[in-house]
Length: 289
Image (cartoon, rainbow, N blue to C red; front, top):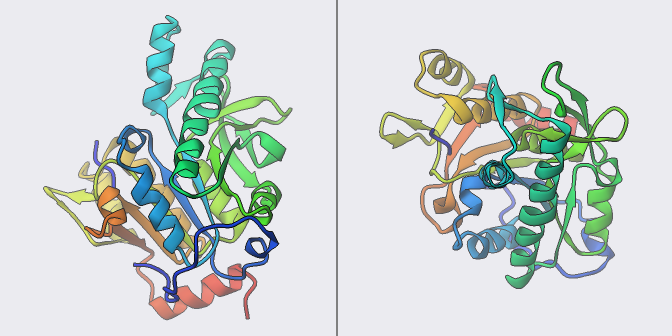
């Protein structure tokens, strides 16, 4: 399964420090989504922390962890069933999903970033009603995120902290819901008015044949998905990236660790429209003149 520049203002900001200035920072917001396979690389956290420090504005990180969940479900002899790429989630399985994603993966990642010099706090989409989801019929506790309340993230920025978000979200009655992390990152980026959304995985970008491509426009992406060149998890990731670009998020990238270490910067996903039009649409969406 395949996966895979910066904003115009590339001035470096110092490492996050506690204090109210971060919340009032008018610079563009960047959302990172780190996939489960990438999380298994012990060398990821240091370069990731460095990249976040270089971002021109405040950042938030959403993570996956499906492989970690799979291992725990097998250890507990809880059956997994997938329908259309989604894990049908019973109440028993949901307890495991929440325990692993929000209680283990989330806290380990936040602790690693803190050790790397970025004070980070791990939360979930359920905390403070951060991400709300509607339930998917016939899949149990599986949901599709529909909206995000930016207040919990902004409160952490106000304290000078980096939010690290598990995708476990709020259902219609406040119950925990299993949500795809790529979708959660997109909804959170929209809610925050983000200027950039970076999907990080264990490959360097969207591959066409043996090569990761630098730019992928909407028409080409749809054709490659339809003809089977882009498949499985990468197809969903590319669709989320296209939706983000079409929603006016200016910089949407599917990338790997190489992006963080000065290598291949990843695949930039575009709508195919003129860059000037994208800039205008992005500024309007973010409420800028």
